[in-house]
Image (cartoon, rainbow, N blue to C red; front, side, top):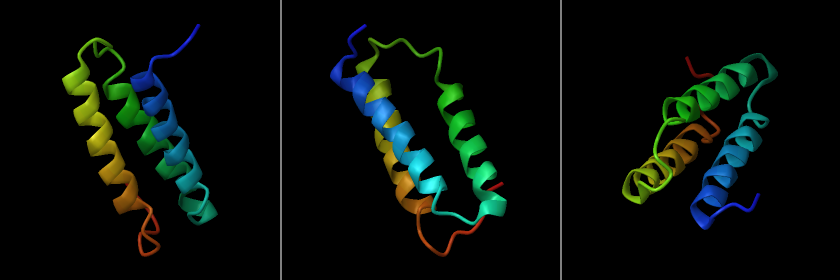
Length: 77
């Protein structure tokens, strides 16, 4: 199955979330991964043809990754 450009962007964002979680202390890494999984699962039922909503969530996710990847943030709950 081939993915659309938007689907590739979503997958890339998820991979980026997981990569950033590996930079966190081992004790809190699972918290970051669980948070990322939960955020993506919230939108799992979203219609893939609803481009406006998908693009909005991608932008929101990018901002969250930038914020949580800051070195000063050690844990998330």
